[in-house]
Image (cartoon, rainbow, N blue to C red; front, top):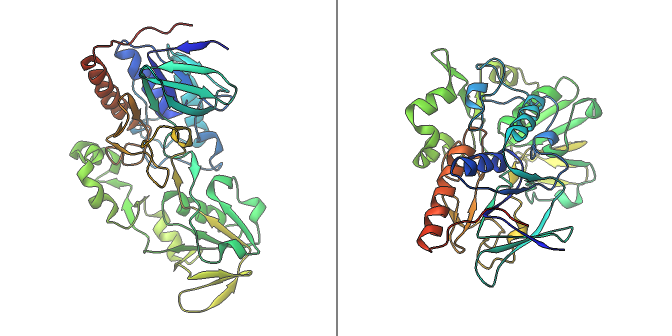
Length: 365
């Protein structure tokens, strides 16, 4: 099978990969986008049915294309999926779906070789890993979880509440998705949110304007130093119009401090009380899935996570990342944040490439 050469290979066809491909075109560079699934959109099609963004449409767009509809409305999962499909259709980029990357290796003459599961080989001086922050569900090692005889789900496996109707459910996590799922599910099941810290609500609107607009106007949205201010060291705040706080105040769902361990079909709460539960639902977020970089010595740390500064790989010139949480700012893993980060990463990679005296060539086969 012949090798396909390109000036830039982008791994991932979700929001981060599409924004990177668009940015590459604005910088005069062709790219090949390799997407494992049979369509673009990244993780979005796999989220729960009722998901809505916690940022308004005007602050939820990729570079070059406004989100359709009410700019002050909050898009649904399916609206985001449709938007990404439309965005991809408008791109002047070589997008190849059904191309799961198996590994990236350093080429003997410089640059990289990208090998797919199907055996195709791509060669490029520049690679951007844009599989994002949400490609691998994070399942923390909770004491007793392996021996729990009930059902354990990750929020990535949750779609709708009806299959859990009448069950006793404990949701582990205190972020936006955990609260959204808990409130939806509480109309069908008995639900408790188990969190290490009290829930931290942030007003959705201040003086009639969405908080995300204030974050943009103040510069906090893109300021890396703002992380302690926005997280308080205790997780991501839950954006709330007041409805979430009011609902949880009713006790349905309720919130309790994190249980100490699981035992058989029971959770053991921090006060020693045991309670039988049917389902433990882990709303514990995601981690980047970048195992395909394991053959690049030093590109990943001991936990298998990218070693980078602002999306620039610390060990392999020519390798960058787009779409990681807090890659450069609060917005980095969001629809609005991947565009600025893609431009930052590509500009850096191109400057480094120019200093090496090798200008990127056009795609050829």
